[in-house]
Image 1 (tube, rainbow, N blue to C red):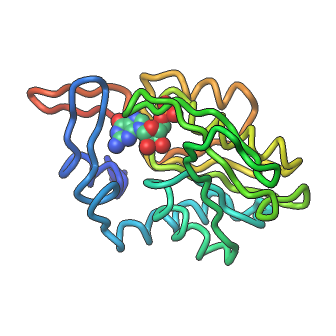
Image 2: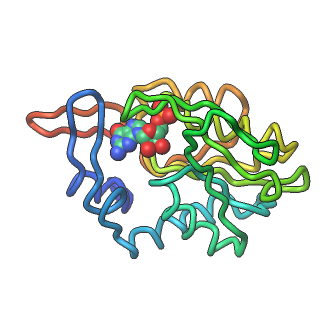
Image 3: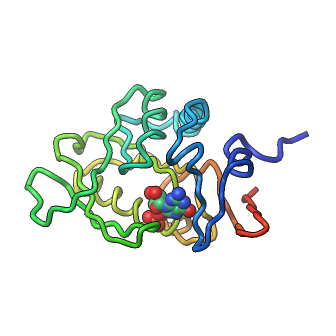
Length: 196
Ligand code: 5GP
């Protein structure tokens, strides 16, 4: 018989907490306390899904993408670069930058990557924990475009399929793989439905 849920969906059902405002909290295994074995499985799964692509670097954004990105990068044997959130208004010439509106905090951040860490010769796998409206991904894609690098693919742990980011990014033609796509969720009684 076919398994009903994959390992990440099972864990979300067990330990995820649905909050008001379309927020899913996964602090006990992915966003605060880290389940390293789960992260290892996420790394393996993304490697399986993207191994036919040429990957020279993994790019994510601080802070919650970093742990996942490290396990993915270990499988591909390439470095991780994480975009840093910067408050400085005067950015130096040696960085690529993009404006990103934070879904969870509703604030605007400038994210920056030092130019020497991404070049036009790079073929980059973009990794993040969540995809909601797609602002974080658009910021990272913009940084790769500024560098003249190739977007080899995009790997997301948890996509909220009822928000527009996933469709937007797929419509742009990118190879986007999400390990769990939440199609709907309810706070009380807790209910989380995944896309088949
Ligand atoms: P987007 O930019 O696609 O709107 O949102 C993606 C970013 O917001 C991710 O980097 C993630 O950190 C955060 N985020 C969006 N939705 C959620 C959510 O439901 N739960 C958590 N924990 N983070 C989220």
